[in-house]
Length: 338
Image (cartoon, rainbow, N blue to C red; front, side, top):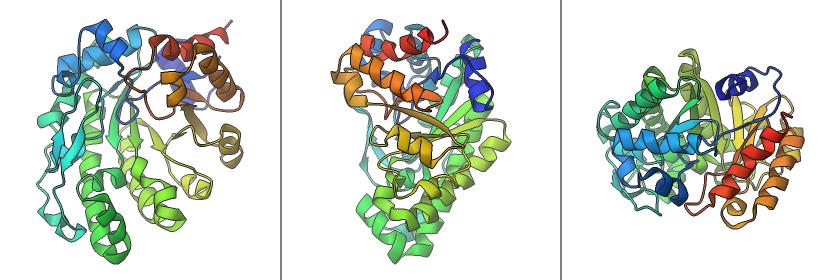
């Protein structure tokens, strides 16, 4: 099986020889110092140049790290397109919002109309088109920042989370506006050639929101976003950060093809709580950056042996993660073919 055949067999719940090894992009960024040095393409240039973005993403595949390519490499594209100011970071620091566009959810209607084919959104679409032309047999993963995380990048997060309760109607209006923009951007990525869309919503965790608001906001708007993406023919992965212990029933309502969790979530607990779901993860980001290959090998074998269908870094990669550690995940899985 090639990389694409294997991953789509997993997504269709068909029999495969082993789990796939992927790193989607977006929040789950796969770019490291080693990959930049190997490719000769560096951040932050690749955040704003489609050819550089595509080549750097391709290097993560051709260097034997992962069985996919994915763009972009940050979580700020959507917020920037809706008016937030973004610091583009450095080789070692990812872009981050430097100035919010709203002071209260009540002002949601003042957000500019976002155009998904211009600015950095357009760069992402062009990069996907380049990757599609060059790598027809490799899964191409487009990425979206989840609705809660995007909304809390437009307004100071503590204000946003307070107003989920105090200004509930305005909060829902903002979330609807944000989700409609994410739908447009996701559909444009699919049209450009993305096979899969990964939605990462680290601020939409049950640890922050609690079960009630997790269901009311995270689950509701993720499903509103996922439905048209699946209707357009894409598979969808959703990544949620933090402990899932108090929100497994609510998470099971998310209509994505795959659920992805970070390393704080015990693998056996997740499999027991979600016996029918495809699960992805959750090799410790810390171990990948600071551990030894043998420890990565142990974690990879444990995840594969205990029911994770797709192996990936738990929350992306630290910039200085050694390529030897990263490659170990895929090497371990390939040994299962023999």
